[in-house]
Image (cartoon, rainbow, N blue to C red):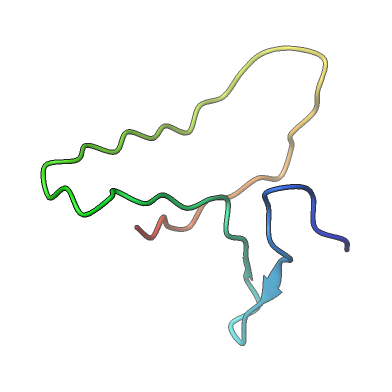
Length: 58
């Protein structure tokens, strides 16, 4: 599968799960930098069945 702009190639792990890096950030050396993120379900015409999120690594 080809990587989309800003998204790296998916990696199949030994335990059978697929790992995908969705982005990165740089805080310019500021220790007081706040990072916000969210994962939400949206309604609409796009089907997203079968998505299972096992964990999020920061």
